[in-house]
Image (cartoon, rainbow, N blue to C red; front, side):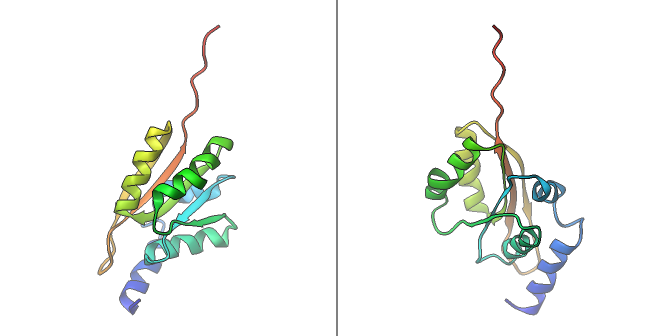
Length: 135
């Protein structure tokens, strides 16, 4: 990573105006699971912020679909948890589609841009509460 990317990414995390409020709030919620992509500077910076708060982290790897089916969907189904991450646009797109198909709610998805770095998407997902049925 070059100096300019490092400075821009650090500023993104350090300045409240660059860290989407929903990501900051998600880091404070019990049960949050952070999704990170080690190949993205902004994602690494977000993961560092999560680590400082002792929030568990999952590296997305190469197959977001497999990760969803093996880990993320079961985790959301068993807990009142939130998934929060800074991901590639393609991974965020697939994750949003899988989440919606599993009755999960995409609370936040926004594109974050930094100078000389690829655009990334900040995403927050939680489990859609089931409606109460009248007796």
